[in-house]
Length: 345
Image 1 (cartoon, helix red, strand yellow):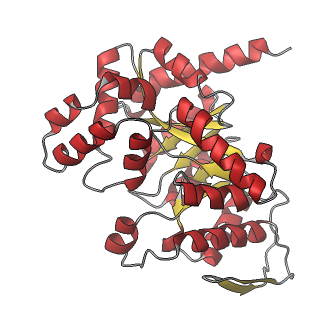
Image 2 (tube, rainbow, N blue to C red; image 1 turned 30 degrees about the vertical axis):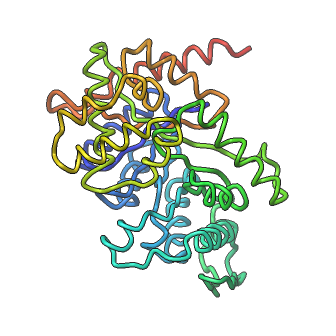
């Protein structure tokens, strides 16, 4: 299992670049950018310029905001610029993001995402002068690439947890991009078996499915500070923007009563009560938060379940140094990498 860092993008670009360099030095395998507060591609290009070997990618792009042609051409350009370091994550967003934020109908999601993935995969393997034609129910394309593409095609990961989208991802995507709040137990007992069944039904080898997942992470010698930071981040999933995905995964894992309280308290601005409504059991299972020793154990619990675990740091900085909030997390990653290397024959 490899460790990556996921940026939400609320920091200045200069801080993202500084943290990205420090993450590479700490031994992180990849850097990913959520497309929420800023465009993913601009920040990723800055990171590509500032780093040497880490993989890079959006996690995830909203397919409703871009045509597959525009996404594919941008991905090909970035794959060239980054010397083959792109891993492309895409998703369908949700009804609020698509219809209220962008004025785009959130329609035919499953069909759209299947076709979108298939087009991007064909573009990743395209060759200059060879026409690419695609005729689907939602998307059509007739395009002839003119620029040489990378010898290494980029991979397409589809964001999926709901059973219907998980079926699409397991049938056509190069890998499955899981979001936050997925426990090792839920991955092992529910999601991976479901995806294996869907892959087999599509005549794909389930062993070939590649998995990534995200965890809210707060590593600090001050255990309570770390756990409160995680509680604050979880509250952010309920307002101002609702996230049906997280409500679903939390209910699936036995925390429906907590979800009901947070749906009531967070939009009403009752922050202290909302924090108190999140029990220790939820923190222990759905996030990585606590002392370095505790977080090490939580990280290792994902080994064998995902090929890459994306850590989204939620520990707030205490001063002007943007990297300071990542210090303990990067130290932990260095320790894990050193242990892994020492164990190799």
